[in-house]
Structure formats: structure tokens, C-alpha cells
Length: 53
Image 1: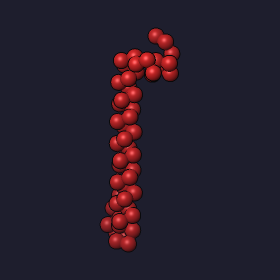
Image 2 (image 1 turned 180 degrees about the horizontal axis):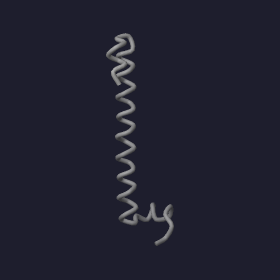
Image 3 (image 1 turned 90 degrees about the vertical axis):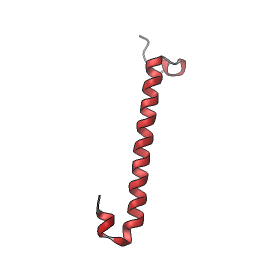
Image 4 (image 1 turned 60 degrees about the vertical axis):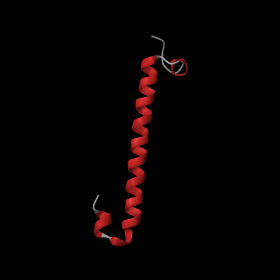
């Protein structure tokens, strides 16, 4: 995590990579939450993917 501080040459790339990973993680969490909400509501689109209850 502190690799970018130890190696100033790689610092910019390190920050970009960390930021990208954080953004991707955040987006996936939001998408999972949204899909979970859709599944709870029983939305017509997501009903077809789930087994009927």
C-alpha cells in the first residue's frame, strides 16, 4: 500500500492503479446492491433470472 511512497518514480502510476481498483470495487458494490434491491422487489427483468418462488 505504501509502495508508491517508497518509490517516487512509480508514485503516479501507483496512485492511478489504487484509485482505479478503489473505483472498480466501489462500482461493483453499488451494482450488487442495486441487483439485490431488484431481486427483493421481484422486478420483471430479474425474475426471469431467478427461480420462481
